[in-house]
Image 1 (cartoon, protein in one colour):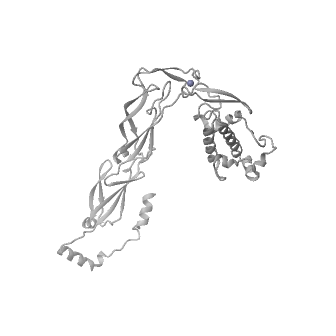
Image 2 (cartoon, helix red, strand yellow):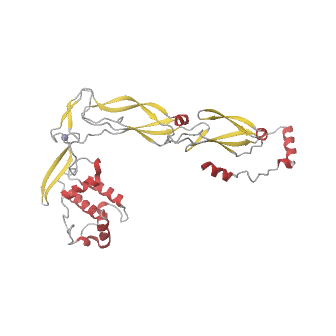
Image 3 (cartoon, helix red, strand yellow):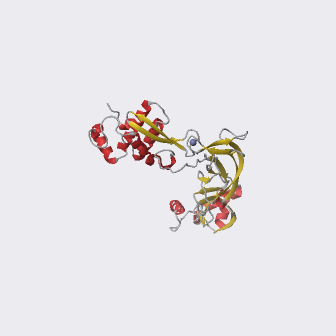
Amino acid sequence: MKKDFYEILGISKNADAAEIKKAYRKSALKYHPDKNPGDKEAEENFKLAAEAYEVLSDPNKKAKYDQYGHQAFDGSGGFGGGHGGMNMDDIFSQFGDIFGGGFGGFGGGGGGPRRAKGSNLRIKVKLTLEEIANGVEKKVKVKRKVQAKGATYKTCTTCNGQGQVMRVTNTILGRMQSASTCPTCGGSGQILDKKPSEADAQGMVIEDETVSIKIPAGVVDGMQLKVSNKGNDAPGNSIPGDLIVAIEELEHEFLKREGENIHFDLYISFPEAVLGVSKDIEAINGKVRIKLEEGIQSGKILRLKGKGIPSINGYGSGDLLVHVNVWTPKTLNKEQKQFFENALNDDHFAPSPEKSEKSFFEKVKDMFS
Ligand SMILES: [Zn+2]
C-alpha cells in the first residue's frame, strides 16, 4: 500500500498552495541525504515527499489525485506507478523554486561563493510621545560579534572557495548528484587562518558598539526599524547582519495618542463654561492657547489642525482634539447650594439643545473622518 500524499507531508486535504510548499520544504530539509548520510529510510522519505509535492503543487495533478488517489498516475506518463518515480536530479531541480535564493548550495547555477551574512541583533527602544512627534536620534549600546583584530582567513580547501560541495553517489536508482553547503567552511568559502588568542574558533570576538539610530517622526508602538549591517558579523569575507530596532511607545501623562491624532481631556469649571474662558493647552510642542466661547457645552470637541503626530510617510500631521468637560462640584456651602436651588426652578437653566448642536455620536463620527 502506498502512503497517502497528504499524510506524507503531514497536512490536511484542505491545505492551500502555501501550506503544501511549506510542508514540503520542512520534509525536504529533514530528510535531505546530506543530513542523513547512509540512511535508507530518510532517503525513501525524501523521495516520497518530493513525489507528493510534485503532484500536490500542480493543480491538475492534485485534482486527479484527489479524485482517484494513486491510481490516477498508474501507467500514465510522467509519473510511473509504484516505486521511484523521480530521481534525485529531478528532486534537486525542484529546489530552485522551493527554497528561492536563500537556500545556498542546491540546484547549481549559483555562480561563485555566496557571501555569508551574520545574524541579526534585536533591541527595543523606548520613546516618549514628544520624541515620536519630532523624530529623534538615539544612541544605543549593542554587543556585536565581529572579526577579531589580526584574524585572517584563507580559501577553504574542501570546496576551493566555492562554499558548496558536490556529492555523487551510486545507488540502485542510478547516479545521484547533489550540491550542499560545505561542511568545513559553512558556505563562506573561507576558513580561519590566524586565530588571535582572544578569538573563538571562527576568529570572532564580542565588542561593545554604540550605534546611532535615526528614528523618523510618526513611528508606532511595535514598529520595527532596520539598521543595515549593524548586527553580528560572520567569519571571512562576509557581510554583517542587521540591527532590528523595535519601537516601544511610553505612555504620556495626559495626552492620548490615536494614530496620528492626539486627544486631550480639558476640565473647566461651571462658571468658566457659562462665562467663556481662554485656556493654555500643553500640546506636544509647547503651549497652545484656545478660547472657549461663553455657554460652551460639556462634551464639545475642539479640533486643532496639524497639532498631532506627523504622518510616518511625511504627508502632513494629525490633529489635537480637545475634549471639553465641565466639572461639577461635589460639595457646596450653604450660599452656593441656595444659588443652585434657585436656579433649579428657573426655566432659563433647563436644557434646550439646538438642532445645530451635534449629538455625541455625530461628534465621534466627525472625529474619525
Ligand atoms: Zn568550504
